[in-house]
Amino acid sequence: MKQGGKLLVVLSIALFCACVGMAQPATSVGAVRTITISSEPNTKVFIGGILYGKTSKDGILEIKTVAVGPHILTLRSDGYKEKSQPLPATARGEIKVPLVKTTDESELAFQEAERLLSRDREKAIAAYQKAIKLRPNYPEAFVALARAQADDLDVDGALKSIKAARRLRTGYAEASAVEGRIHKDNAEEEQAIAAFKRAIAEGKGFQPEAYTGLGLLYKEKAETFGGASDFANESANYVEAAKNLKIALKQLSGAPDAVVIYQLLGLVYERQKKYDEAIALYEEFLKFFPDIPESEAVRSFIIQLKKEKP
Image 1: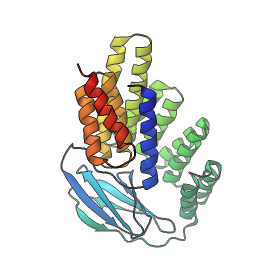
Image 2: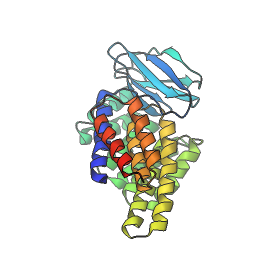
Image 3: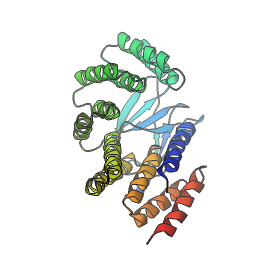
Image 4: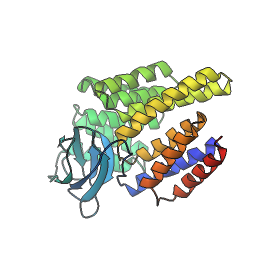
């Protein structure tokens, strides 16, 4: 199957999930539990730093996830003070999280930056910088700024922002993961691997963004070796890619970004000629995402793979 078409599906599914803003069911890696978050309407819900979606106009978000944790539950809503609280690994049912209005100008500037990010990156960067000027001790704003700067191809600025975030908060796993992404996108392989691995250590083994970064890095290395007919190194790097993407998929545990990892891991299995594993993965995907527009394409992958199997 041609990779280009598959990657288009990956990207379109990712965009679809971002647009609907809803959490998705988890993979079959453990017992699935349902958590219902009740708060203000259109509130972003994060578990362990991972965005699971937004609450509805009624202030409700139902999340199906695998019990991994405990983690920190964080809610962000425009005009309200951010709130974080522990989320036990055994948490189930409805969790009510009341929010209070905020007049903190730095927090309001951060929220403005988040709103602007998808429409005007330059203005978003300025709003993040305003938030930091108002509150110099704002590590989350530095990391968000670094992401926006990296997307704007300001590598030096992004790394400077990450350095500031890490200075303000020791052991900041997300900052290290973003640093790894910056190095990876800048073709600085050794620095990227070191930063991703540091992020995983700082997260005490939990850092799906870093595991995804490593998976993508090793996948790209495998493709490069394959293009040079170095099949031994191609195979070894696909093994590393699959290992890291599997961990990322497990840790994302129901978050919308898990959809993309299903597709990437499926591509790796296909390159390894692990047709049974790829088919099983795509079939699992369809159990959880049967009705999104791209599902028909995924069904066609399964049909073609079954024909290609020895």
